[in-house]
Every structure is written in structure tokens, then in C-alpha cells.
Image (tube, rainbow, N blue to C red; front, side):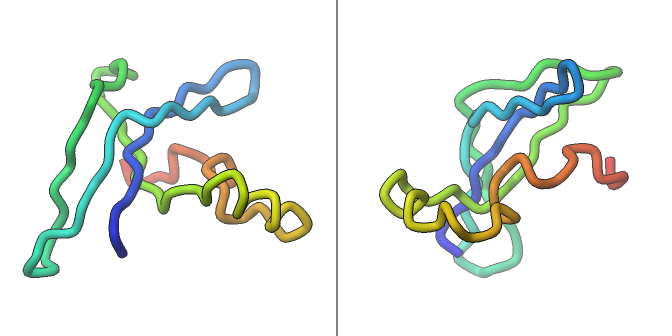
Length: 84
């Protein structure tokens, strides 16, 4: 794995809106990640939640996948998976 995207998720009217706020890179020893943020997400109930996800493919790759399942897309999973 080369990197993960760091995302902030906002829920509104039953929809999730994702904003990329940085990236996470694996440490050389393989025992953790370094997270670099370009922005800090807004607080929700006093917590700052960041989702780390595999990056979406580039536009050209995404068009080729259009007939495939979208299970890898950012919006396929609920942001609050109970681990927070």
C-alpha cells in the first residue's frame, strides 16, 4: 500500500459528503502510519473524526470500472462504523 486518503465526512439530508483533507503513508518499519493533514475536520460532539480510505482511481480508470460494483467508492460505507 502506497498511501491512504484522509477524509472528513459530513452527513446532510441522509447523504454523506466526503472532503479529502490529507493522506496517510505507511512507516518504513510497517508498524504504523504518518498522517499529513491539509485541514482539520469540524468537531462532531466534541470529536474530530477522520476516515482513512484507499484512494479512488483516476478518472480514466474510474470510467473503465463504471459497469463494476462501486463497493470500493468512498460513499459505500457508513462513516460511523461503531469504532469511534
